[in-house]
Amino acid sequence: MKDNHFITLAIETSCDETAAAVLSEGRTALSNVISSQIDIHRAFGGVVPEIASRSHLEQINRVVELALADADADFGDVDLIGVTQGPGLVGALLMGLATAKAYALALDKPIVGVHHIKAHICAAYLEHAELKPPFLALVVSGGHTDLVRVGGYDAYTVLGRTRDDAVGEAFDKVARALGLPYPGGPAIDDAAKDGDPSAVAFKRVFLEKDSLDFSFSGVKTAVLNYLNTRRQAGEAVNVADAAASFQQSVVDVIVAKTLRAAEMLGETKAVMAGGVAANSLLRRALGDACREKGLRLYSPSPLLCTDNAAMVGAAAYLKYKEKGADGLDLDAFPNLDL
Ligand code: KG4
Ligand code: ZN
Image (tube, rainbow, N blue to C red; front, top):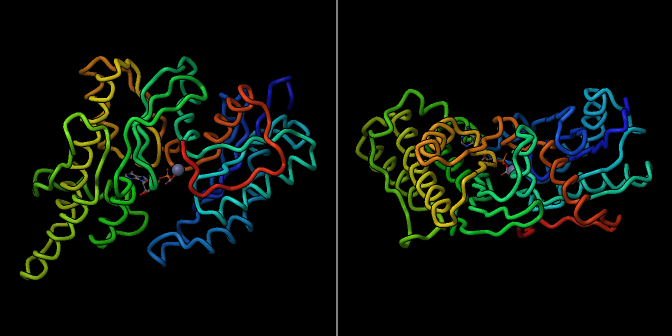
């Protein structure tokens, strides 16, 4: 390989995907390998942290070797190693960090620790060569629901965030109550395709006027109460209708707040990021709303929205160019702030 392109090897193990990717010039993914643990955790209805750590340990070297092979590269081509250092499950993060440090030491190459949420936002750079800050970013994942102003390649200001459940968490909890399999987000997305989004009027929580914060625990509780009431009355629940109605109420709030944030800041570009950005209704609804308001929306492919290492490579490259390398004393931070 090696045509003098700068090669980044990236590793992501913050939750339940063991992932590695190889990037050229920090912007082009030559490979993006994701080994999902979903089948392992499904029996438990959610991610079991100890099992996640063990499974990362078992898979990570194989996944890195596959990523290099897919990119037609080998260890000698690597110029930089990027790794997620938080937020996430501490044991899971440590598996990726220990692996990345071992490679950095053995290859005598620089290492950079990456913020998982910044990485989600950086996913948008991979498919859009023209994208550059400033822009507004909507981050919707299993652990986060944030509206962020990206003022520069390493300048992030949180404008609003959830005050209780993250939106992905609400999807997962509602899915469980509806008897849908883990992970709940994609299951609700699927079930909703056969449902009527106006069947049940679940509340939309907007909080104070012009607040860019979110709250999803109310709508989650409303769905649980609705299900209990129906079941106690011996009435059948139409799962597709309930899923579609829940999804619509959540998407309505997210779209409205994203547009309001863009308007308040005078932004002309918006990026959607995180696992819930793979949701088909959110992609369609936000796409339509942005088009109507003349706002350019960047929505990474669903595979780049959910956890992956290509996004980590993009973030690592940018951080390395702005701030240089980290030391081998790099640590894991389960609650790392933006
Ligand atoms: O970003 P991500 O892969 O991991 C975290 O950093 O949390 O996001 C995972 C979350 C889960 O809650 C999952 O249910 C949700 O993203 N998700 C979806 C969809 N695909 C993944 N939610 C709604 N619709 C989807 N299609
Ligand atoms: Zn994530």
